Length: 225
Length: 402
Ligand SMILES: Nc1ncnc2c1ncn2[C@@H]1O[C@H](COP(=O)(O)OP(=O)(O)O)[C@@H](O)[C@H]1O
Ligand SMILES: [Mg+2]
Picture 1 (cartoon, rainbow over the protein chains, first blue to last red):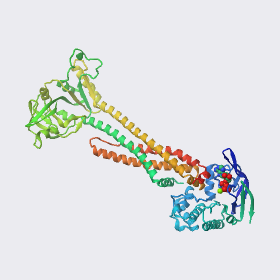
Picture 2: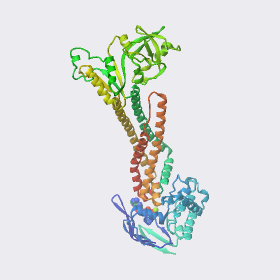
Picture 3: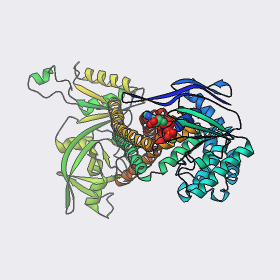
Picture 4: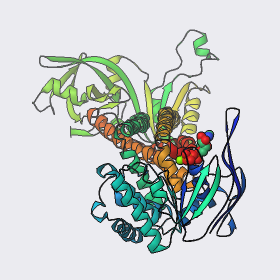
């Protein structure tokens, strides 16, 4: 599903060049569950942003479903994100003035789906993360774990084939972090979504069948379980 | 995103900041309201003048003795004489023209008018029954001046409404005698209250037959003659005939001035229309100030919602959609403010009309759409820059800002 060839991402900070990604080659098959681990600053988030078409590599090629997406313009990339990729962030990124249900509806609204179709799908997505009762609550009326579950409902409601999660438990206590990870794993299992989770919690990373370790912008080794 | 939803989304993000949204809308509302109020003022002035002129009579020509052009002094002036006067015979001769329907000769003077112990100074008009018709006056009671030979003096008079009230109070004035100067006149009619007509207080006047006024004021000339043409189209021909007749009667000299009410009216109409547009445009400038405020607020909004913009992009919003969302916000601000301003403006015009019933305040038909149009154009125009800034945000950097 994913194929990265010689991906580099270089930032210019002052006069210095910072190589956030220094030649990454990677293949991820459809339906895989991959964790990405490594010290802070090793390039995990940058990798995830490239995979999610939020960022462009300085060099290299990105093939998504066999199609070179490196040179697509912003609007085309946006369309691809909308249809194939769901994001889960460390800081949830819910829109504070919208209810849980409306937050989950947002991607469908952006995609232009009719309201009659959106409502039941959003409700089902919330039910799937165990928050059917919280549909009318605003984010500030929800706990951290609940917020992240709303975010997961939002990330999955368009039925994307790829879920990218950047430290999804980084802002949660242990118990709710565990719930969130189990939820992601369940969705991966039940719907066959490809799941890439960035974490620096080894215990969490161990749960994935395939683990990538990063250091200084490179993938050191892949550990296959 | 669908259009309606784009607007709803914009409206909700505005609602999340009620104070600054309300203030920005207020600025737009003041601008839009000012467009309405000032154009209503200009239009009111125009209507006032038009109404006042119309009250003078329709298809009216005013014949004044003397040339208005002073550049080439008339021979009369040269030898130290006043120009030849306009006589009653001159006025009556004007009726020969087929384009003239009525002629009302006018003599004016001022004299004390008294009855019993009550006395007041009044403007005394000497004319014929035609005066009341030419000027569209109405009689409250009694009858008009007698028809018949205008050269004959008769001791009858019409009283203006105020004069009648002051001299007679609740007593019926018809058939009673009043003293005007050193003569006695019988009251045969009372004019209905007419209000103002170009500053002449009809209600404070007394009307007597033209010959009586000439005797009273010891004058043979007329102050002017009012000529009513048969129709609007006949005004020019009537004017030509009037000038020709008088030139012939004054031995080839053109020593009168004919003012057509139409020409004056058209000039005033043009000037006051232009004034109205100018006032509206001035008020429109205040809307551009509101537009700058909108831009400012939108820039603040974009800066404060970077994370949200990043999220929308991550969820698949194209730059065009992001731009639309923010332009919609500016548009909603401008539209809501503009509509509120139009409401406030119309209310203020209504209030002013109640407070000053004599002045015909009226917002011209174009003022509300113009106010809304300028508000919208300004709001959206000034919203484009912030919207483009939002659309261009790098999603990774935007998501990182919290
Ligand atoms: N916008 C940026 N400008 C400059 N340097 C950046 C930027 N984003 C990331 N970096 C650098 O790239 C490297 C990788 O960052 P990141 O992918 O966020 O690491 P991780 O997620 O593994 O902690 C770090 O050295 C970081 O400082
Ligand atoms: Mg990171």
